[in-house]
Every structure is written in structure tokens, then in C-alpha cells.
Image (cartoon, helix red, strand yellow):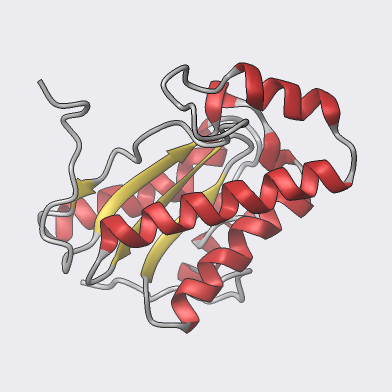
Amino acid sequence: MGRSRYKFMNNQTPHFITCTVVNWLPFFASPAMAQIILDSLKFLQEHQRLTIYAYVIMENHLHLLASSQYLSKEIGDFKSYTARKVIDHLKERKADRMLLELNADKSRSRTDREYQFWQEGSHPEQILGAEMMVQKIDYTHYNPVKRGYVDEPIHWRYSSARNYAGMPGLLDVTLFSL
């Protein structure tokens, strides 16, 4: 049996993707850590490696609606790069307690590394039409509202909800419209 029922299908179509920090640790509560994610996504956009339609960065996970010619590879590269940057950031700041957590939460099968930042997999769901796209964009934008952090999606800085409301966001996105 395969490791997951979630698989990248036709890479040219948008997918809803979730990336979660191991043990749901709240690393992105730190603006510096969230900035690592934003900078990496921006790099992938600028180099035309990833098209982002919507996103939200929560304290311990993120959701993306994205497409790419090589989506599975790009998400893998994104997770690898951001994990390395986060671990380097923690080492520079001598955040030994946090590094210990990333070591303790490392999958036992991962003998090639000292730390593990992301949970394995990204649960990609291929978007199968406009209705599903709108539903996933709404789910993404309302994630911080559902968690009780804000009253309105546009109040969450780390989201594309502002872009969809015609306001400047922290990251440009390709707006989806019917």
C-alpha cells in the first residue's frame, strides 16, 4: 500500500497543498520564520517555477493553491530549502531547545539528517473545477478566522485574502475569477 492517498496528479492544473511543521510546532508565530516562507515562495514565483493563486501561513502549517509544470518537484524543493533556512536560523540564534524538538520529532527512518522540520507529504488535492477552486480559496482565507485569530480574513497579514480584496498583500498572487 502507498504512503498516502494524496498524490500530485496533472501538474499543469492547480492543486490545494498543505505543509505542516512536525508535531504541529508553532514556528511561524515568529515573523522571521514566516518571512523565510514568503521569501522562498516569492523566489519560486519570480523564477516562474510556481504560480500561486492563494495562500495562508498559520503558526504551524500553510496552505497553498498553486500550479507548476513540475509541481511535486517544486514543493519538494521548497520544503527542503525552507527547512534548511529555518534550521540555520535556529542555529545562528542558538535556539537549542527548538532544535532539540526538531531532532526528537525526526522520523526514525530519516538517518540522513539530524533534524526534521516538515511532516512528510503535502496532501496535494487536484482542483477539479471552478467550484472547487473557490471552495479551497475560501477555506484558505478563512483558516485564521476559524481558529479565532481574526474576525475577517483580510486582517490576517500572512494570507492572500488582502490580494483578493484589492489590497496589497505580502506576496503577489495570480487572482482566480469566474
